Image (cartoon, rainbow, N blue to C red; front, side, top):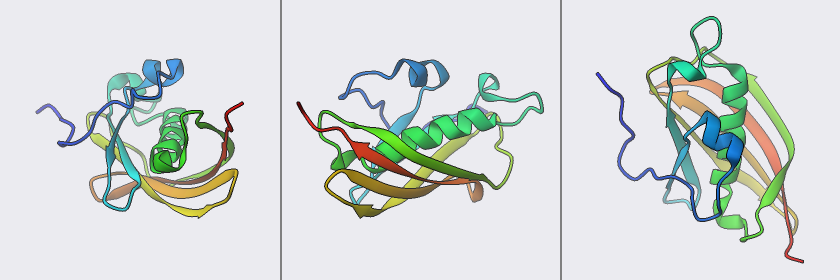
Length: 139
């Protein structure tokens, strides 16, 4: 049985493309009522490690994408860069499944956004993460 994205998810294309994420993804986002965005992808064999589960590097890449999706409404057209990132692996992630990420913004300053979130599949938390995005100002 093929896994499909739930309704409402779309590619993040209004700010251009990220060549690395285009290769490892595709990753999708969906707006939430609180102003953040949920992220998702369908895990495939190309996302696995030698043990047949989701590769840790992929999960960290997806978490970095999710940081920006969660904070999307606080970023201008100039975007931002990851200033700090931490992650904790909780459980192995399955192949052939819907993998999602959601989170919250804990603080916004003039130049930084502080975020925390989790990656999960169904009811199983796979990874938790937090990070700081440095907003890039227009020149």
